[in-house]
Length: 189
Image (cartoon, rainbow, N blue to C red):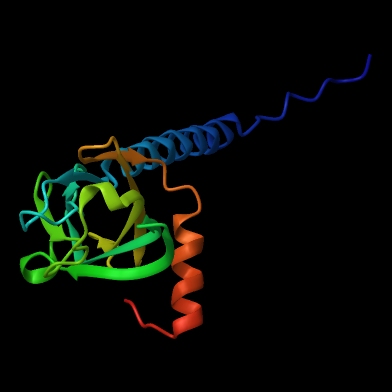
């Protein structure tokens, strides 16, 4: 009867350690990704009454609803697709601004006038519709090498006595803005 060779010891421990580190790395990576998404800046916008009585265009409040601050904030307000006294107007830049030191900490907000001076001096009855777009440029902290932008859109509809403003999805607002910038050669951050 031939002699049996003793079983060769296997290296199970190093292989198990390699699997452990792979699983641990994957779990930590997923948790980090979820935390990054959850902590990312969330800008929101709401309309306010116009700065000037008699003006028809609202002011807009842009707020940081996220957990991290945003830096290098610049907000631009523009009107598009306006119907006033039977005339249709395309795209018009109407206002811009930045918060102090161009930063918005979590829960902070900044109000920008979409009508510096008197933008539309017309009776309410002459205005049938106005669309206002807002673009907020910002850099999310701590990733300040990234420049981001977010678009908002409000539509003003005349009910016969006043303009009622409704927040709408941005839809093609970004495309309209980009087309305007390209056609006019306007520079934005």
